[in-house]
Image 1 (tube, rainbow, N blue to C red):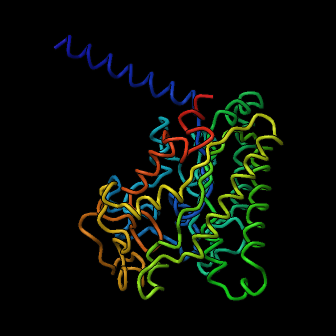
Image 2: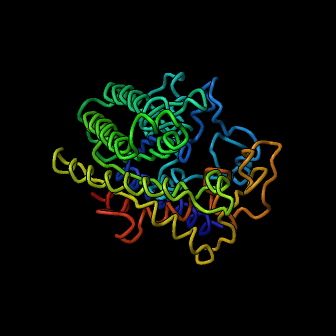
Image 3: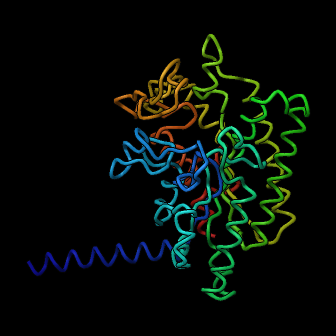
Length: 359
């Protein structure tokens, strides 16, 4: 009995050591973005229609309860945190009134369903936190950490932390869904402005200590069930996909510029489009059988009614690429996060996140 107890003590000590070492390498993850990585901020926005704090969302999440994640379970931000030995970054709006700066020490998530690079992309959902507001909230967290840790320790903390940014899809949805926007500006002008505006926010984050960026490109959003249902044949909306590709090309160019313009920044860029497109084009290779229809919803491709409590959901979520009319299943998020963390250089570059955290 004594030897068994000794064995468990050793295992527990090694576990504690490995976790503490991982957190020394990556002390925190700060997440910025939209509903793809929202972990519950929109629960705290009274006017927002973009919420997921009701069934059947969260049916495969620990505890089987909805949390505000637009998913049947965990999303890519949760998986990424797990891979670097951290708890999932909690939603900022759940912490802000608790007045305990220690709550932010392992990072926080500012991501918000409906958010875009531009202010106002959330008009259809009434309320969200656009990227400018998310960065503003982060600046408050930054200042509180400086007060708590002192400027030197805080600078070290932020320089080793990951700044994950998943945004841009709602801007393109907004453009192609608005005749007013399309009449006022060309898609090329609009995408160029998206990139310029995002670059400004990245420079703001850099001014507040961010040095390691995890940049997630826009996926083939024209292939989500909400866009497929607009086609009589169920095909992807290719024009939207084409502009997603052009945005991604501009983002990659901008990241190279920032690398030369700013001191000591490093980044991982993830080619979401190619990986998710592979899943859609060759689903069987990844264990999927359904790429057109959502798992949860009603109507054509289960995309005419969102994943509300009245909706029907599939019995095997692992079969589906999409959970609802816009968002991937936990199975898809898991595959994407594997590529983000340690995928081949054609999908995650110039560094994988595994390489980024080791710097």
